[in-house]
Amino acid sequence: MKFVVLFALLLLVTEIFAHGDHGGSDTRENSNVVVLTPDNFDQLIGKDKFALVEFYAPWCGHCKNLVPVYEQLADAFVHSKDRVIIAKVDADDHRELGTRFDVQGFPTLKWFGKDSLIPEDYNGGRDLKSLSDFVEEKSGIKPKIKKEVTAVKVLTSQSFDELALDPQKNVLVEFYAPWCGHCKNLAPIYEKVAKDYAQESECVVANIDASDHRTIGDRYDVKGYPTIKFFPKGENKTPVDYTGGRTEQDFIDFLNENCGTQRLVGGRLSGDAGKIPKLDAFAVEFTDATTRADKENVIKEAKVIADELDTRFAQYYPKVMEKSLEKEDYVDKEIARINKIIESGTISDNKIDDFTIRKNILSSFHKETVPQGGHEEL
Image (spheres, rainbow, N blue to C red):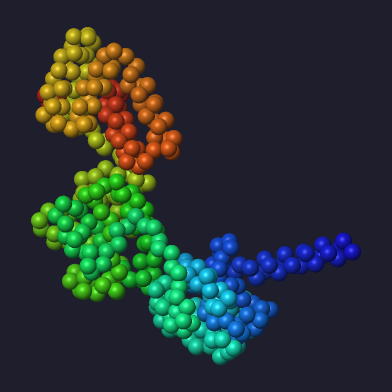
């Protein structure tokens, strides 16, 4: 008896693995996309629920591009799963279903009404709005779409001029269309770039759906998607076409050069960020000085320059000199302390920037990491 039960369980597990995930449309655990097979198709479709069914193949590139959108669509209607279902069937594996419903290519989407196995072809857009509008129109059920949290500044026809044409800001703008495959491929990279520059108030990473806000796209002669343009700071806001590469590093190199920023991949500041060359020379001179009197003279000169610059980090240079005058190992211990704080994961990105700049300035007091030479040469 035990053997029979174990064998039955084994068959059940095998069936789940055989039909639970065929890759092409969704591989997320606890997915709200219903998986259809020849065994359950007629039990679920054409009964008392509306259904949108995707016929896909795991090897199909367009099917893979549809994955995140189709998953979001299923999430948007899960609150009404007793009235409408978002489903998929691997029509490459289950060819009899594809043949039965005249599937000629992948992905093919078909709408099944209640109590009907005669489907209607879906020929609309493959973006979330188009799909959810279609399901709502056919079923009368409103979707509940979760608003995605993004670091990219989303522009519209109403908000475009206020940000992109702001003379106080450098703005990188992607003109995209939701159905564009290249735009979808760029999206995760562009999101990373936006996060990298989230702390830079004067260097903004933005986008606009130019297929929806056509007047803006037409104004800037957008002919294809994605088109990326850079709107530089200043009164003359004539945009510059971005023609560089599409990697995170490519965008960072471009923005650092054009915004005067010093960001790295991942958003951290570079090792030169916040350093002041004129005061770096005083740091070298202070470190090279052999007597206390000489060091004190350097501090006096550095304070004059720091007062002229009148910034917090300029004032940090003479402060480090004064601390080092009292404690010879101050710089090494302070760098170690700051490193521990930065890597603790307990402080905000803004604080990480602050401590990184302090560490960079402290590094100027290490002979082996700074160019030699007096401040008179700068």
